[in-house]
Image (spheres, rainbow, N blue to C red):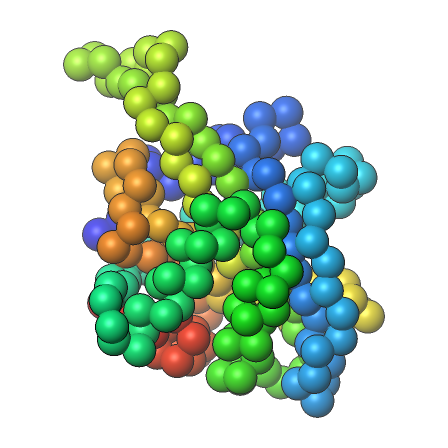
Amino acid sequence: MINREDMLELTRRMTVSRNCLTRVAGCYVDADGEFDGSFNINFQKLRVSEREKNLEFAKKIPFAKTNENLKQYRFERGDQPQASMWTLLMSLRNVGLKNDAMMDTFYDLVMEHYQAEGPYAIFLYHGSYDVPLKGKDKEYQGESEEVYQFLIGTISPQVADQEPGEPVCGFLFPAFTDRSTDIQHINVYQSDILRPHQELEKKILRCWG
């Protein structure tokens, strides 16, 4: 189960003035399912309007209704087929998305299985949050307890040429469990719980509840 307060704590660091996102990378896919361009940029180099828009997209995932639109799933580590995605996401997290070859591998895996009705966009955000200690009175203390490095992935339909709309599905990895890094789990977002993109969990991420 996901603790709503953990998610709210994270989203409070997703504003222009208190931004914990460091980088954003993405690619565009045309109506035929073909690659249609990509980018990879330091988040602070975006124009303010672009930062605001991307923060809203990224925030959509952890701010979703916990345990309804945003659910926790488990990753298998080791030699199982699903471990390859866990390894890829861990590697992308560790290099802060600064590896275009690994990004292309991630895009290819999504494009192979994602079921779209038109052109769409795949965005991946890297963030870093110094988690402050909490005292027994639950008040924040000055010192940091750990650094939570994370990825937020979103998949959105394109509302115009290379202009993504609201995310329809996505994920937060590693999970932020009990205010700490949880590399065994991933939080998966579905905007429509009645018609979810189940291929995200079953074929792309290969995780289970």
